[in-house]
Length: 319
Ligand code: NAP
Image (cartoon, rainbow, N blue to C red; front, side, top):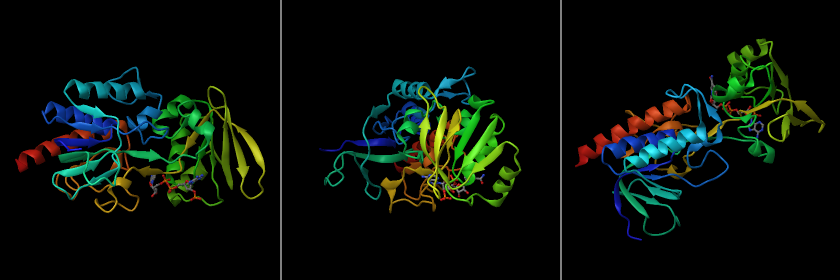
């Protein structure tokens, strides 16, 4: 297929990608958004917000907004200004080529499917999950990966947090503001988290620990009612009643496509220099794919706007 060169292609359709699409479309850059393909993880069109229920902290929605609704509105807004959105997944990119080359089909095909003068990467990050069937089924119905987003819904409830790193302890400490009790389930006896976080968690009257244990099932029909735990040393199985299960076993950025082509930090997040620019001219990164600190819809949207403006200036500079 002969590729038609675009001015800008955006990879990913979460808040960062769609905000970049709105801005570049309004700047008459006719962006093409490669939104990804449906899947049961956050590596999917619309990103992690597609897996949440109510979003109460996105400015402009005093009554809250459902995550999927927010993404549909952003999408509609981008399309209104002429952004083209395709439901495909990039399978290979060549960032050294000029124009930049993108494959969406067979990655070994000699010719790319799409070429572009500039590329905005907003492929996001995904929360690592336990991989249990009922965990996926009850995601958004008691199972969550974000205490900042969902903690409020667990007022006076019993909450379980899985993980032993800084994220798990941070989530647990945040959740003590709402929950009746917070039980941290960790697969070993020692926490991986930093000393200061450990001290805080040990001091909290609301936090208790279940050591050497893993969650093997999530109970509940419509919403979470408990978890099944297995002690990894004894093999003993127990049931723990809980209305909330927060999975905090780490995140992984969706950056495999750029291995060997873009600079990443040790955790695999893309490195940006000035604004959203990567070290490769014409390639910009925004949202969770380059931010492991804030990870909020609003910060992702903000950096999508920055990437659009950086792209516009780059394109003007090469004209
Ligand atoms: P992490 O440090 O990789 O910790 C992940 C935790 O989840 C580990 O305790 C691990 O157990 C456990 N785990 C992994 N897979 C599991 C599974 N399948 N089942 C059960 N448990 C599992 O990840 P993180 O906590 O998200 O932190 C990532 C980075 O961000 C770290 O560098 C951290 O310091 C930083 N961070 C900092 C802060 C802060 O300073 N406030 C907050 C959040 C994150 P094992 O220990 O047995 O491997």
